[in-house]
Length: 345
Image (cartoon, rainbow, N blue to C red; front, top):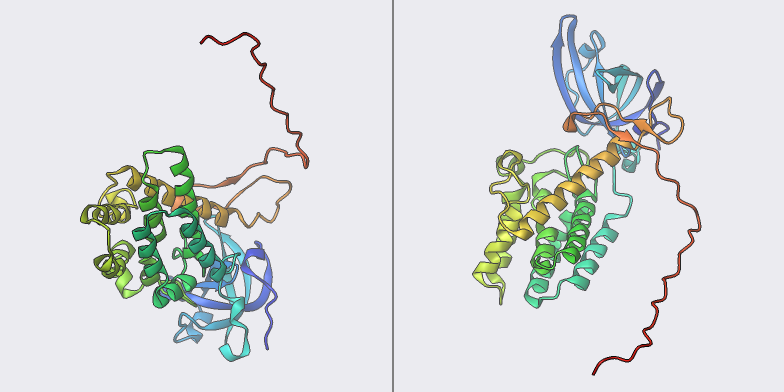
């Protein structure tokens, strides 16, 4: 069985190498000197753009997404982005390789993330009708299986198997913490909405080798698909008033915050605002993690800049962290002086 030596996260500018990757996007383009292939290659550590220039490009009638390719290439910087210039390419049979080389997955196994999510909700959602609702939805075998294998995004954040569960659990935790600070919030409905808000992504995005938008995803989007998925469960729900169900739908429907960001409605309740900002915060921080996880080649010390991050339209910076001693002295609380004067009757 073929082994893999070089991973995308370790590739540096100017490096020559030969190894296997999976094609997740391919397009034949045309330049002044002839046709060229524009590819997106992937392994379990990430993805990278690649080019096959003429005349080599004319050797390939088709390069399909999902194919494993063994390439010889050199890494070069183009418009502040690292890309590969391919010098040779051969197709590899999937029977000859271990597919775990090519599919990125969450650090915590997706099955464990699912159990953590269910345990979290079990410990914090108090109203029995809400408990019955989230258990019936998330426990349905088809939905559970889809959640475990789904990414949380196509490329910007949580774009790996288990990413959807990782994002969902983080948003639930954020909402729970915010709920402790603001007693006005209805934490039960907020946590149930947080657990269900991105359910439609399991249908919007394809799983497995390539993360792309399904036909449903392109036509409807995950917010509509998610509401459509939970609607049969809401119709069967007992002891949930129409007004409460309406509020749950609004929280989910408005979680993208603004119309220009794909939200059919803008948030209009406390809980809807909280879910929107918790969702946005977790997505942004994960995108930062992904952008800054690979230090530059000349990296020395703790701080460094990322390559230009197009989704955020800026370079991103990893700063030096405040030193933290291994053992930190905890100051004992001051004892209050007791009053020796007699109290008035």
